Amino acid sequence: MRSLDYYNVKLEQFRNSNRVILKGELTNTSGKSYSTVAVRVMLFVKNSVAVNEVFLINNLPNGTTKAFERHIYDLPPGQAFGDITRYEIFTENCY
Image: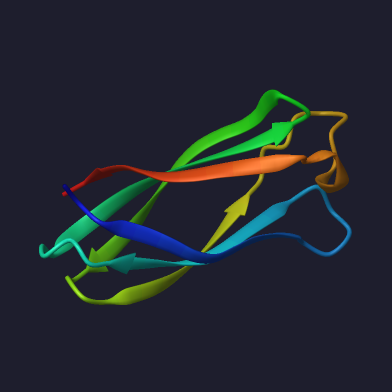
């Protein structure tokens, strides 16, 4: 079973816009190196999914930690950064 762990994950508002910045670190202790890791992030407003997006992290050798930063542009109309109540982040696939 692969062991990819997320640390220091946080959401930030970009300036005074509805753009969300997701920052964090991904550590690979799986025993295997990956050229690409597909990461799914879901942002929730109350109990409804507002954003459901996949992004890629490239070149993650075994035993390393890599920082990531993802700009999320597609908050639904009428929703703002302050409306986000929680998030989920997980590895969708590794190549």
